[in-house]
Length: 575
Image (tube, rainbow, N blue to C red; front, side, top):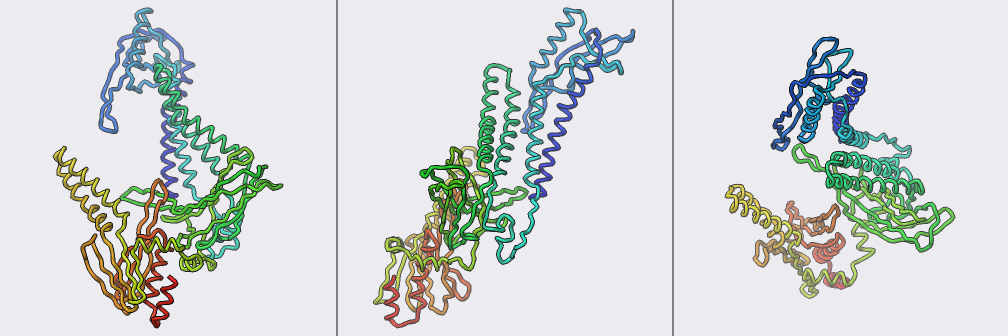
Protein backbone atom coordinates (compact mmCIF):
# COMPACT_ATOMS: atom_id res chain seq x y z
CA UNK A 1 0.00 0.00 0.00
CA UNK A 2 2.75 2.45 0.98
CA UNK A 3 4.98 1.74 -2.03
CA UNK A 4 2.02 1.66 -4.39
CA UNK A 5 0.81 4.97 -2.98
CA UNK A 6 4.16 6.66 -3.64
CA UNK A 7 4.16 5.36 -7.22
CA UNK A 8 0.54 6.37 -7.82
CA UNK A 9 1.13 9.82 -6.30
CA UNK A 10 4.24 10.25 -8.45
CA UNK A 11 2.19 9.61 -11.60
CA UNK A 12 -0.33 12.27 -10.53
CA UNK A 13 2.40 14.79 -9.79
CA UNK A 14 4.27 14.17 -13.06
CA UNK A 15 1.03 14.40 -15.07
CA UNK A 16 0.31 17.81 -13.54
CA UNK A 17 3.88 18.97 -14.03
CA UNK A 18 3.92 17.94 -17.71
CA UNK A 19 0.56 19.63 -18.32
CA UNK A 20 1.79 22.82 -16.64
CA UNK A 21 4.96 22.90 -18.73
CA UNK A 22 3.44 22.26 -22.17
CA UNK A 23 0.19 24.21 -21.71
CA UNK A 24 1.17 27.10 -19.46
CA UNK A 25 4.91 27.54 -19.11
CA UNK A 26 5.75 27.02 -22.79
CA UNK A 27 3.11 29.59 -23.80
CA UNK A 28 4.49 32.14 -21.32
CA UNK A 29 8.03 31.54 -22.59
CA UNK A 30 6.87 32.01 -26.21
CA UNK A 31 5.01 35.21 -25.32
CA UNK A 32 8.05 36.59 -23.51
CA UNK A 33 10.27 35.79 -26.47
CA UNK A 34 7.82 37.41 -28.92
CA UNK A 35 7.93 40.75 -27.09
CA UNK A 36 11.23 41.38 -28.92
CA UNK A 37 9.84 40.55 -32.37
CA UNK A 38 9.26 43.29 -34.92
CA UNK A 39 5.98 44.38 -36.49
CA UNK A 40 5.33 44.56 -40.21
CA UNK A 41 2.40 44.82 -42.61
CA UNK A 42 1.09 41.67 -44.29
CA UNK A 43 -1.53 40.79 -46.85
CA UNK A 44 -4.23 38.34 -45.84
CA UNK A 45 -4.45 35.54 -48.37
CA UNK A 46 -7.13 33.47 -46.60
CA UNK A 47 -8.82 33.10 -43.24
CA UNK A 48 -11.53 30.69 -42.25
CA UNK A 49 -12.74 28.62 -39.30
CA UNK A 50 -12.32 24.89 -39.67
CA UNK A 51 -14.11 22.30 -37.53
CA UNK A 52 -13.77 18.62 -36.85
CA UNK A 53 -15.32 15.95 -34.61
CA UNK A 54 -13.36 14.87 -31.54
CA UNK A 55 -14.24 11.60 -29.82
CA UNK A 56 -14.80 11.83 -26.05
CA UNK A 57 -13.84 9.29 -23.41
CA UNK A 58 -17.51 8.28 -23.04
CA UNK A 59 -17.80 7.46 -26.77
CA UNK A 60 -19.59 10.65 -27.80
CA UNK A 61 -18.33 13.37 -30.15
CA UNK A 62 -17.66 17.09 -29.68
CA UNK A 63 -17.23 19.64 -32.48
CA UNK A 64 -13.91 21.49 -32.21
CA UNK A 65 -13.11 24.81 -33.92
CA UNK A 66 -9.86 26.41 -35.10
CA UNK A 67 -8.88 29.50 -37.12
CA UNK A 68 -6.90 28.69 -40.30
CA UNK A 69 -5.05 31.71 -41.67
CA UNK A 70 -2.63 32.36 -44.52
CA UNK A 71 -0.80 35.70 -44.93
CA UNK A 72 2.18 37.16 -46.85
CA UNK A 73 4.65 39.68 -45.47
CA UNK A 74 7.85 41.31 -46.84
CA UNK A 75 11.16 41.79 -45.00
CA UNK A 76 14.15 43.43 -46.74
CA UNK A 77 12.42 43.06 -50.11
CA UNK A 78 11.85 39.34 -49.73
CA UNK A 79 8.36 37.80 -49.47
CA UNK A 80 7.60 35.38 -46.65
CA UNK A 81 4.46 33.42 -45.82
CA UNK A 82 2.96 32.66 -42.41
CA UNK A 83 0.01 30.70 -41.03
CA UNK A 84 0.26 31.13 -37.26
CA UNK A 85 -2.78 32.93 -35.86
CA UNK A 86 -1.90 32.90 -32.12
CA UNK A 87 0.61 31.55 -29.65
CA UNK A 88 -1.17 28.24 -29.17
CA UNK A 89 -1.99 27.92 -32.85
CA UNK A 90 -2.48 24.14 -32.65
CA UNK A 91 -5.03 24.53 -29.86
CA UNK A 92 -8.64 24.00 -30.92
CA UNK A 93 -11.65 24.70 -28.74
CA UNK A 94 -15.24 23.55 -28.44
CA UNK A 95 -16.31 27.21 -28.09
CA UNK A 96 -16.82 28.44 -31.66
CA UNK A 97 -17.12 32.06 -30.53
CA UNK A 98 -13.35 32.30 -29.85
CA UNK A 99 -12.44 31.21 -33.37
CA UNK A 100 -15.09 33.35 -35.07
CA UNK A 101 -14.19 36.40 -32.96
CA UNK A 102 -10.58 36.17 -34.10
CA UNK A 103 -11.72 35.61 -37.70
CA UNK A 104 -13.89 38.74 -37.54
CA UNK A 105 -10.96 40.74 -36.18
CA UNK A 106 -8.65 39.60 -38.99
CA UNK A 107 -11.17 40.33 -41.74
CA UNK A 108 -12.08 43.74 -40.29
CA UNK A 109 -8.41 44.76 -40.08
CA UNK A 110 -7.77 43.65 -43.67
CA UNK A 111 -10.82 45.46 -45.06
CA UNK A 112 -10.27 48.68 -43.11
CA UNK A 113 -6.47 48.99 -43.50
CA UNK A 114 -5.96 46.92 -46.65
CA UNK A 115 -3.45 44.90 -44.60
CA UNK A 116 -2.91 43.22 -41.27
CA UNK A 117 -0.14 43.66 -38.73
CA UNK A 118 1.98 40.60 -37.99
CA UNK A 119 5.09 40.03 -35.87
CA UNK A 120 8.22 38.28 -37.10
CA UNK A 121 11.36 37.00 -35.45
CA UNK A 122 14.41 39.08 -36.48
CA UNK A 123 16.65 36.10 -35.86
CA UNK A 124 14.48 33.83 -38.00
CA UNK A 125 12.41 35.84 -40.45
CA UNK A 126 10.41 32.78 -41.51
CA UNK A 127 8.88 32.65 -38.01
CA UNK A 128 5.89 34.97 -37.59
CA UNK A 129 2.55 35.31 -35.76
CA UNK A 130 -0.60 37.40 -36.08
CA UNK A 131 -1.68 37.65 -32.39
CA UNK A 132 1.08 37.42 -29.78
CA UNK A 133 -1.12 38.17 -26.77
CA UNK A 134 -1.89 35.59 -24.09
CA UNK A 135 -5.30 34.44 -22.90
CA UNK A 136 -4.63 34.99 -19.22
CA UNK A 137 -7.99 33.51 -18.18
CA UNK A 138 -7.19 30.28 -20.02
CA UNK A 139 -3.64 30.18 -18.60
CA UNK A 140 -4.93 30.72 -15.08
CA UNK A 141 -7.51 27.95 -15.50
CA UNK A 142 -4.91 25.52 -16.81
CA UNK A 143 -2.48 26.51 -14.04
CA UNK A 144 -5.14 25.61 -11.49
CA UNK A 145 -5.93 22.40 -13.42
CA UNK A 146 -2.31 21.20 -13.42
CA UNK A 147 -1.84 22.33 -9.81
CA UNK A 148 -4.74 20.10 -8.72
CA UNK A 149 -2.90 17.05 -10.09
CA UNK A 150 0.41 18.09 -8.54
CA UNK A 151 -1.18 18.84 -5.15
CA UNK A 152 -3.04 15.52 -5.08
CA UNK A 153 0.12 13.69 -6.11
CA UNK A 154 2.18 15.35 -3.37
CA UNK A 155 -0.56 14.56 -0.86
CA UNK A 156 -0.59 10.88 -1.80
CA UNK A 157 3.21 10.70 -1.66
CA UNK A 158 3.29 12.40 1.74
CA UNK A 159 0.57 10.14 3.14
CA UNK A 160 2.13 6.97 1.71
CA UNK A 161 5.67 7.76 2.77
CA UNK A 162 6.75 5.12 5.33
CA UNK A 163 7.09 6.49 8.83
CA UNK A 164 10.34 5.84 10.61
CA UNK A 165 9.43 4.80 14.13
CA UNK A 166 12.19 3.99 16.56
CA UNK A 167 11.59 0.99 18.74
CA UNK A 168 11.30 1.98 22.41
CA UNK A 169 14.16 0.98 24.69
CA UNK A 170 11.84 -0.81 27.12
CA UNK A 171 10.00 -2.74 24.37
CA UNK A 172 8.72 -6.14 25.51
CA UNK A 173 7.15 -8.44 22.87
CA UNK A 174 5.00 -10.00 25.58
CA UNK A 175 3.57 -6.52 26.22
CA UNK A 176 2.75 -5.30 22.70
CA UNK A 177 1.80 -1.79 23.86
CA UNK A 178 5.44 -1.19 24.81
CA UNK A 179 6.64 -1.88 21.25
CA UNK A 180 5.14 1.36 19.84
CA UNK A 181 6.84 4.65 20.64
CA UNK A 182 3.54 6.52 21.06
CA UNK A 183 2.54 4.05 23.81
CA UNK A 184 5.95 3.70 25.46
CA UNK A 185 4.55 5.43 28.55
CA UNK A 186 1.11 6.22 30.00
CA UNK A 187 1.41 9.74 28.54
CA UNK A 188 -0.33 9.85 25.14
CA UNK A 189 -0.33 12.69 22.60
CA UNK A 190 -2.97 13.42 19.97
CA UNK A 191 -2.50 14.04 16.26
CA UNK A 192 -3.90 17.59 16.51
CA UNK A 193 -0.88 19.18 14.83
CA UNK A 194 -1.28 16.86 11.86
CA UNK A 195 -4.98 17.80 11.71
CA UNK A 196 -3.93 21.41 11.08
CA UNK A 197 -1.83 20.32 8.10
CA UNK A 198 -4.68 18.17 6.75
CA UNK A 199 -7.14 21.05 7.13
CA UNK A 200 -4.96 23.44 5.14
CA UNK A 201 -4.16 20.79 2.55
CA UNK A 202 -7.84 20.13 1.79
CA UNK A 203 -8.53 23.87 1.79
CA UNK A 204 -5.79 24.45 -0.80
CA UNK A 205 -6.79 21.50 -3.00
CA UNK A 206 -10.45 22.55 -2.94
CA UNK A 207 -9.43 26.12 -3.78
CA UNK A 208 -7.47 24.89 -6.80
CA UNK A 209 -10.22 22.51 -7.93
CA UNK A 210 -13.24 24.79 -7.57
CA UNK A 211 -11.19 27.83 -8.59
CA UNK A 212 -10.55 26.16 -11.94
CA UNK A 213 -14.29 25.98 -12.69
CA UNK A 214 -14.82 29.48 -11.32
CA UNK A 215 -12.22 30.97 -13.66
CA UNK A 216 -13.64 29.04 -16.63
CA UNK A 217 -17.17 30.41 -16.09
CA UNK A 218 -16.32 33.94 -14.99
CA UNK A 219 -17.30 36.63 -17.50
CA UNK A 220 -19.07 34.41 -20.04
CA UNK A 221 -22.51 35.80 -19.14
CA UNK A 222 -24.24 37.08 -15.98
CA UNK A 223 -25.60 33.66 -14.97
CA UNK A 224 -22.25 31.95 -15.55
CA UNK A 225 -20.52 34.64 -13.50
CA UNK A 226 -22.93 34.06 -10.59
CA UNK A 227 -22.21 30.32 -10.71
CA UNK A 228 -18.48 31.03 -10.86
CA UNK A 229 -18.75 32.91 -7.56
CA UNK A 230 -20.84 30.12 -6.01
CA UNK A 231 -18.04 27.67 -6.81
CA UNK A 232 -15.86 29.56 -4.33
CA UNK A 233 -18.20 28.92 -1.37
CA UNK A 234 -16.79 25.46 -0.56
CA UNK A 235 -13.08 26.45 -0.59
CA UNK A 236 -13.89 29.61 1.37
CA UNK A 237 -15.61 27.53 4.06
CA UNK A 238 -12.66 25.12 4.17
CA UNK A 239 -10.23 28.04 4.56
CA UNK A 240 -12.29 29.42 7.46
CA UNK A 241 -12.33 25.95 9.00
CA UNK A 242 -8.56 25.54 8.58
CA UNK A 243 -7.94 28.93 10.22
CA UNK A 244 -10.19 27.96 13.13
CA UNK A 245 -8.37 24.62 13.63
CA UNK A 246 -5.01 26.38 13.43
CA UNK A 247 -6.14 29.02 15.91
CA UNK A 248 -7.24 26.31 18.35
CA UNK A 249 -3.91 24.52 17.96
CA UNK A 250 -1.93 27.70 18.57
CA UNK A 251 -3.96 28.36 21.73
CA UNK A 252 -3.95 24.89 23.33
CA UNK A 253 -0.74 23.48 21.77
CA UNK A 254 0.11 19.93 22.88
CA UNK A 255 -2.23 18.56 25.55
CA UNK A 256 -1.00 15.15 26.78
CA UNK A 257 -3.43 12.56 28.11
CA UNK A 258 -2.28 10.48 31.08
CA UNK A 259 -3.74 6.99 31.41
CA UNK A 260 -4.69 5.89 34.91
CA UNK A 261 -4.77 2.26 33.77
CA UNK A 262 -1.78 1.44 31.57
CA UNK A 263 -2.66 -0.12 29.28
CA UNK A 264 -6.45 0.14 29.14
CA UNK A 265 -8.01 -3.23 29.84
CA UNK A 266 -10.42 -5.29 27.78
CA UNK A 267 -12.65 -6.67 30.49
CA UNK A 268 -11.57 -3.83 32.75
CA UNK A 269 -11.27 -0.07 32.68
CA UNK A 270 -9.91 2.66 30.45
CA UNK A 271 -9.45 5.68 32.64
CA UNK A 272 -7.25 8.72 32.70
CA UNK A 273 -7.07 12.50 32.83
CA UNK A 274 -5.68 15.55 31.07
CA UNK A 275 -5.18 19.21 31.86
CA UNK A 276 -6.31 21.69 29.21
CA UNK A 277 -4.53 25.10 29.30
CA UNK A 278 -6.63 28.19 29.95
CA UNK A 279 -9.16 29.29 32.51
CA UNK A 280 -12.65 27.77 32.55
CA UNK A 281 -15.71 28.09 34.71
CA UNK A 282 -17.02 25.30 36.89
CA UNK A 283 -20.04 24.84 34.60
CA UNK A 284 -18.11 24.10 31.42
CA UNK A 285 -18.65 20.54 30.19
CA UNK A 286 -16.78 18.19 27.91
CA UNK A 287 -17.92 15.10 26.07
CA UNK A 288 -15.49 12.20 26.33
CA UNK A 289 -16.06 9.30 23.91
CA UNK A 290 -14.35 5.92 23.86
CA UNK A 291 -14.47 4.31 20.40
CA UNK A 292 -13.23 1.02 19.02
CA UNK A 293 -12.96 1.14 15.25
CA UNK A 294 -12.35 -1.81 12.97
CA UNK A 295 -10.36 -1.21 9.77
CA UNK A 296 -10.21 -3.79 7.04
CA UNK A 297 -9.26 -4.08 3.38
CA UNK A 298 -11.25 -5.99 0.77
CA UNK A 299 -9.84 -6.96 -2.60
CA UNK A 300 -12.02 -7.87 -5.57
CA UNK A 301 -10.07 -8.56 -8.75
CA UNK A 302 -7.76 -5.60 -9.29
CA UNK A 303 -9.79 -3.31 -7.03
CA UNK A 304 -8.83 -2.78 -3.39
CA UNK A 305 -11.30 -1.10 -1.06
CA UNK A 306 -10.57 0.15 2.47
CA UNK A 307 -13.37 0.11 5.04
CA UNK A 308 -13.87 1.15 8.63
CA UNK A 309 -16.66 0.82 11.15
CA UNK A 310 -17.06 1.82 14.80
CA UNK A 311 -17.89 -1.45 16.56
CA UNK A 312 -18.06 -0.05 20.09
CA UNK A 313 -18.75 3.45 21.37
CA UNK A 314 -19.40 4.84 24.82
CA UNK A 315 -19.71 8.52 25.75
CA UNK A 316 -19.84 10.39 29.02
CA UNK A 317 -20.18 14.07 29.90
CA UNK A 318 -17.68 15.41 32.42
CA UNK A 319 -17.36 18.81 34.06
CA UNK A 320 -14.02 20.58 33.68
CA UNK A 321 -12.46 21.23 37.08
CA UNK A 322 -10.62 24.60 37.19
CA UNK A 323 -7.04 24.53 38.49
CA UNK A 324 -3.95 26.74 38.42
CA UNK A 325 -2.66 25.01 35.28
CA UNK A 326 -6.00 24.95 33.45
CA UNK A 327 -9.05 22.70 33.27
CA UNK A 328 -8.78 19.13 34.54
CA UNK A 329 -10.78 16.43 32.72
CA UNK A 330 -11.18 12.95 34.24
CA UNK A 331 -12.80 9.94 32.59
CA UNK A 332 -13.38 6.27 33.32
CA UNK A 333 -14.93 3.62 31.06
CA UNK A 334 -15.76 -0.05 31.62
CA UNK A 335 -14.75 -2.09 28.56
CA UNK A 336 -16.77 -5.29 27.95
CA UNK A 337 -14.70 -8.46 27.98
CA UNK A 338 -15.92 -9.59 24.55
CA UNK A 339 -14.40 -6.62 22.71
CA UNK A 340 -11.19 -6.92 20.63
CA UNK A 341 -7.88 -5.50 21.79
CA UNK A 342 -5.72 -2.93 19.99
CA UNK A 343 -3.72 -4.24 17.04
CA UNK A 344 -1.11 -2.89 14.67
CA UNK A 345 -2.24 -1.54 11.27
CA UNK A 346 -2.69 -4.37 8.77
CA UNK A 347 -5.34 -5.68 6.39
CA UNK A 348 -7.64 -6.07 9.37
CA UNK A 349 -7.04 -4.38 12.71
CA UNK A 350 -8.73 -2.52 15.59
CA UNK A 351 -7.98 0.91 16.99
CA UNK A 352 -9.18 2.35 20.31
CA UNK A 353 -9.47 6.12 20.64
CA UNK A 354 -10.49 8.68 23.23
CA UNK A 355 -12.17 11.77 21.72
CA UNK A 356 -12.61 14.86 23.92
CA UNK A 357 -14.77 17.77 22.77
CA UNK A 358 -15.85 20.90 24.59
CA UNK A 359 -16.00 24.68 24.46
CA UNK A 360 -13.30 25.80 26.87
CA UNK A 361 -11.88 29.29 27.35
CA UNK A 362 -13.91 30.46 24.38
CA UNK A 363 -12.27 27.94 22.04
CA UNK A 364 -13.59 24.67 20.68
CA UNK A 365 -11.33 21.97 22.12
CA UNK A 366 -11.41 18.86 19.94
CA UNK A 367 -8.70 16.23 20.35
CA UNK A 368 -8.51 12.51 19.61
CA UNK A 369 -6.00 10.17 21.24
CA UNK A 370 -5.19 6.63 20.16
CA UNK A 371 -4.91 4.61 23.37
CA UNK A 372 -3.65 1.06 24.02
CA UNK A 373 -6.39 -1.33 25.13
CA UNK A 374 -5.28 -4.93 25.64
CA UNK A 375 -6.13 -8.21 27.31
CA UNK A 376 -3.80 -8.71 30.26
CA UNK A 377 -3.68 -10.83 33.40
CA UNK A 378 -5.80 -8.17 35.11
CA UNK A 379 -8.53 -8.45 32.47
CA UNK A 380 -11.81 -10.11 33.32
CA UNK A 381 -13.42 -12.64 31.02
CA UNK A 382 -17.11 -12.55 30.13
CA UNK A 383 -17.63 -15.29 32.74
CA UNK A 384 -15.89 -13.14 35.36
CA UNK A 385 -18.11 -10.20 34.43
CA UNK A 386 -21.19 -12.35 34.71
CA UNK A 387 -20.09 -13.59 38.12
CA UNK A 388 -19.36 -10.11 39.46
CA UNK A 389 -22.35 -8.43 37.82
CA UNK A 390 -25.06 -11.06 37.23
CA UNK A 391 -28.11 -10.31 35.14
CA UNK A 392 -30.79 -8.41 36.98
CA UNK A 393 -34.15 -9.97 37.79
CA UNK A 394 -35.81 -7.97 35.01
CA UNK A 395 -33.17 -9.10 32.50
CA UNK A 396 -33.63 -12.74 33.49
CA UNK A 397 -37.41 -12.40 33.31
CA UNK A 398 -37.24 -10.83 29.83
CA UNK A 399 -34.97 -13.65 28.62
CA UNK A 400 -37.19 -16.35 30.09
CA UNK A 401 -40.24 -14.82 28.45
CA UNK A 402 -38.59 -14.39 25.03
CA UNK A 403 -37.16 -17.93 24.97
CA UNK A 404 -40.10 -19.55 26.81
CA UNK A 405 -37.70 -20.98 29.38
CA UNK A 406 -39.31 -23.44 31.77
CA UNK A 407 -37.40 -25.20 34.54
CA UNK A 408 -39.07 -28.19 36.15
CA UNK A 409 -37.45 -29.26 39.38
CA UNK A 410 -39.72 -32.30 39.64
CA UNK A 411 -38.88 -33.66 36.19
CA UNK A 412 -35.28 -32.43 36.46
CA UNK A 413 -35.46 -30.78 33.05
CA UNK A 414 -35.39 -27.40 31.38
CA UNK A 415 -37.12 -26.51 28.11
CA UNK A 416 -36.64 -23.44 25.97
CA UNK A 417 -37.51 -22.23 22.50
CA UNK A 418 -34.92 -20.21 20.55
CA UNK A 419 -36.49 -18.13 17.75
CA UNK A 420 -35.17 -17.51 14.27
CA UNK A 421 -32.90 -14.60 13.45
CA UNK A 422 -34.71 -11.35 12.64
CA UNK A 423 -31.58 -10.10 10.92
CA UNK A 424 -32.25 -12.68 8.19
CA UNK A 425 -35.24 -10.61 7.08
CA UNK A 426 -32.78 -8.11 5.64
CA UNK A 427 -31.25 -10.81 3.41
CA UNK A 428 -34.74 -11.93 2.34
CA UNK A 429 -35.61 -8.30 1.59
CA UNK A 430 -32.58 -7.99 -0.71
CA UNK A 431 -33.71 -11.15 -2.51
CA UNK A 432 -37.24 -9.71 -2.95
CA UNK A 433 -35.83 -6.48 -4.41
CA UNK A 434 -33.59 -8.42 -6.80
CA UNK A 435 -36.57 -10.52 -7.87
CA UNK A 436 -38.70 -7.46 -8.63
CA UNK A 437 -35.86 -5.81 -10.57
CA UNK A 438 -35.18 -8.99 -12.56
CA UNK A 439 -38.85 -9.53 -13.47
CA UNK A 440 -39.14 -5.85 -14.46
CA UNK A 441 -36.11 -6.11 -16.77
CA UNK A 442 -37.48 -9.31 -18.33
CA UNK A 443 -41.00 -7.88 -18.78
CA UNK A 444 -40.17 -4.38 -20.01
CA UNK A 445 -36.96 -5.04 -21.91
CA UNK A 446 -37.64 -8.63 -22.93
CA UNK A 447 -34.14 -9.53 -21.79
CA UNK A 448 -33.05 -13.02 -20.74
CA UNK A 449 -30.70 -11.35 -18.26
CA UNK A 450 -33.75 -10.26 -16.26
CA UNK A 451 -34.84 -13.86 -15.77
CA UNK A 452 -31.32 -14.88 -14.75
CA UNK A 453 -31.21 -11.96 -12.30
CA UNK A 454 -34.60 -12.94 -10.87
CA UNK A 455 -33.47 -16.58 -10.53
CA UNK A 456 -30.38 -15.49 -8.57
CA UNK A 457 -32.64 -13.66 -6.12
CA UNK A 458 -33.97 -17.01 -4.88
CA UNK A 459 -30.59 -17.65 -3.23
CA UNK A 460 -31.06 -14.58 -1.00
CA UNK A 461 -34.75 -15.31 -0.50
CA UNK A 462 -33.98 -18.88 0.51
CA UNK A 463 -31.17 -18.00 2.93
CA UNK A 464 -33.13 -15.15 4.49
CA UNK A 465 -36.34 -17.16 4.87
CA UNK A 466 -34.48 -20.15 6.31
CA UNK A 467 -32.60 -18.00 8.82
CA UNK A 468 -35.79 -16.32 9.99
CA UNK A 469 -37.94 -19.46 10.03
CA UNK A 470 -35.43 -21.83 11.62
CA UNK A 471 -36.09 -22.23 15.34
CA UNK A 472 -35.21 -24.79 17.95
CA UNK A 473 -37.02 -26.36 20.87
CA UNK A 474 -34.48 -27.60 23.37
CA UNK A 475 -35.07 -30.01 26.23
CA UNK A 476 -32.26 -30.45 28.75
CA UNK A 477 -32.04 -33.26 31.30
CA UNK A 478 -29.17 -34.31 33.55
CA UNK A 479 -28.22 -37.17 31.23
CA UNK A 480 -29.50 -36.08 27.81
CA UNK A 481 -30.09 -33.10 25.55
CA UNK A 482 -32.73 -33.06 22.83
CA UNK A 483 -32.86 -30.47 20.04
CA UNK A 484 -35.95 -30.30 17.80
CA UNK A 485 -35.28 -28.13 14.75
CA UNK A 486 -38.27 -26.47 13.06
CA UNK A 487 -38.83 -24.41 9.97
CA UNK A 488 -41.52 -22.11 11.32
CA UNK A 489 -43.89 -24.75 12.79
CA UNK A 490 -42.83 -27.64 10.58
CA UNK A 491 -40.45 -30.21 12.13
CA UNK A 492 -37.16 -30.58 10.25
CA UNK A 493 -35.12 -32.94 12.41
CA UNK A 494 -34.61 -34.14 15.95
CA UNK A 495 -31.21 -34.61 17.56
CA UNK A 496 -31.00 -36.60 20.79
CA UNK A 497 -27.64 -36.72 22.55
CA UNK A 498 -26.55 -38.22 25.84
CA UNK A 499 -23.92 -36.63 28.02
CA UNK A 500 -21.07 -38.71 26.61
CA UNK A 501 -21.73 -37.48 23.07
CA UNK A 502 -21.57 -33.76 23.89
CA UNK A 503 -18.18 -32.08 23.90
CA UNK A 504 -19.17 -28.51 24.80
CA UNK A 505 -21.60 -25.64 24.33
CA UNK A 506 -20.17 -22.34 23.11
CA UNK A 507 -21.47 -18.81 22.69
CA UNK A 508 -20.47 -16.96 19.51
CA UNK A 509 -21.17 -13.80 17.54
CA UNK A 510 -23.73 -14.73 14.88
CA UNK A 511 -24.38 -11.47 13.01
CA UNK A 512 -23.44 -7.79 12.87
CA UNK A 513 -25.14 -4.79 11.29
CA UNK A 514 -23.36 -1.62 10.17
CA UNK A 515 -24.96 1.71 9.25
CA UNK A 516 -23.03 4.79 8.07
CA UNK A 517 -19.69 3.46 9.26
CA UNK A 518 -20.94 2.39 12.70
CA UNK A 519 -21.91 -1.01 14.04
CA UNK A 520 -25.52 -0.67 15.11
CA UNK A 521 -26.11 -4.17 16.47
CA UNK A 522 -24.43 -7.50 17.15
CA UNK A 523 -26.24 -10.75 17.88
CA UNK A 524 -24.96 -13.81 19.73
CA UNK A 525 -26.10 -17.42 19.63
CA UNK A 526 -25.30 -20.78 21.20
CA UNK A 527 -23.72 -23.73 19.43
CA UNK A 528 -23.44 -27.35 20.55
CA UNK A 529 -20.29 -29.31 19.66
CA UNK A 530 -20.32 -33.11 19.68
CA UNK A 531 -17.38 -35.43 20.23
CA UNK A 532 -17.47 -36.33 16.53
CA UNK A 533 -16.95 -32.70 15.50
CA UNK A 534 -20.56 -32.06 14.54
CA UNK A 535 -21.92 -28.57 15.16
CA UNK A 536 -25.55 -27.85 15.97
CA UNK A 537 -26.65 -24.21 16.11
CA UNK A 538 -29.08 -23.71 18.96
CA UNK A 539 -29.91 -20.10 18.08
CA UNK A 540 -30.82 -17.55 20.73
CA UNK A 541 -30.38 -14.16 19.00
CA UNK A 542 -28.98 -12.59 22.20
CA UNK A 543 -28.08 -8.90 22.37
CA UNK A 544 -24.85 -9.52 24.28
CA UNK A 545 -22.29 -12.21 24.90
CA UNK A 546 -23.08 -11.89 28.60
CA UNK A 547 -26.71 -12.89 28.03
CA UNK A 548 -25.68 -15.82 25.82
CA UNK A 549 -23.18 -17.00 28.43
CA UNK A 550 -25.85 -16.78 31.14
CA UNK A 551 -28.12 -19.22 29.31
CA UNK A 552 -25.14 -21.44 28.46
CA UNK A 553 -24.31 -21.73 32.16
CA UNK A 554 -27.91 -22.55 33.01
CA UNK A 555 -27.92 -25.39 30.50
CA UNK A 556 -24.55 -26.68 31.72
CA UNK A 557 -25.65 -26.57 35.35
CA UNK A 558 -28.46 -28.99 34.63
CA UNK A 559 -26.83 -31.06 31.90
CA UNK A 560 -23.27 -31.47 33.16
CA UNK A 561 -23.70 -31.72 36.94
CA UNK A 562 -23.76 -35.31 38.19
CA UNK A 563 -25.09 -34.66 41.65
CA UNK A 564 -27.97 -35.80 43.86
CA UNK A 565 -31.37 -34.30 43.36
CA UNK A 566 -30.90 -31.87 46.27
CA UNK A 567 -27.86 -30.27 44.65
CA UNK A 568 -29.68 -29.83 41.35
CA UNK A 569 -32.63 -28.33 43.12
CA UNK A 570 -30.37 -25.88 44.96
CA UNK A 571 -28.61 -24.87 41.74
CA UNK A 572 -31.86 -24.21 39.92
CA UNK A 573 -33.24 -22.31 42.87
CA UNK A 574 -30.39 -19.84 42.49
CA UNK A 575 -31.42 -19.28 38.87
